[in-house]
Amino acid sequence: MVSTDYNFSVPDKPEEDLHSTEIKDDEKITVNRSTYYYLIEQAEYLRELVHTDNLFYHIKSLGAKTYGDLKRKE
Image (cartoon, rainbow, N blue to C red; front, side, top):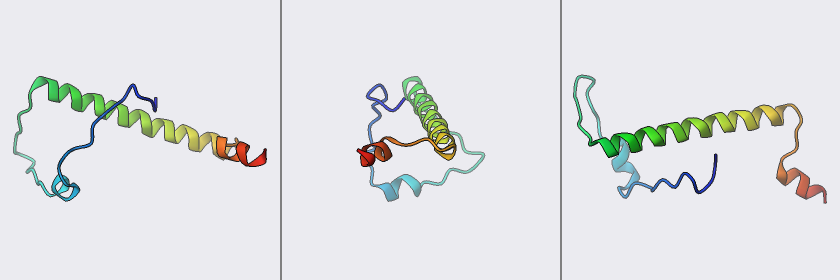
């Protein structure tokens, strides 16, 4: 899943501006369809990254070696 298939751009706003916007619960926002699908695609990608990380953690907890561990032994 972590490949060039998922090439999402970094927002061009400063990071402090990304988190300073507050939206009230009853406030509605409107986005166009392509932006909506882009956001859904990003959300699915991030969910898969979290699942992949959880899988790596579980496999390593069972005693599996990482690539770095194997390279150090050579």
